[in-house]
Length: 88
Image (cartoon, rainbow, N blue to C red; front, side):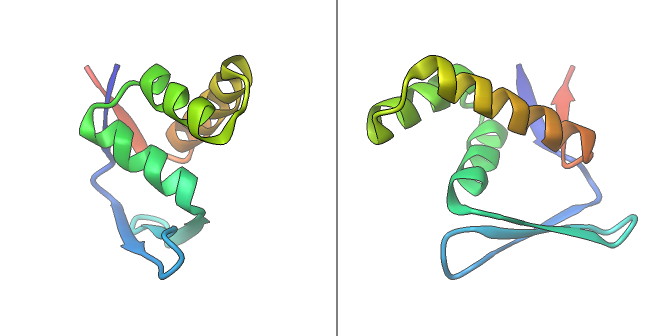
């Protein structure tokens, strides 16, 4: 699946590699750590969930099944918060 940033979302990078994500429709904002920021950017660039998770699993020595489980939850949350939209 491919994803895009929702049109009402603005992102600013932070000094620690994370980001502040602002929903301009309802003035809600979120602070993401570096890994979540990298995940969001990767999905927007067209990297698959599976490929991103394989990279995390290798670089952080975490079981792939656990990484996939965790990042599927993060992806669902990004969609529920209307930060990411699936491109159909």
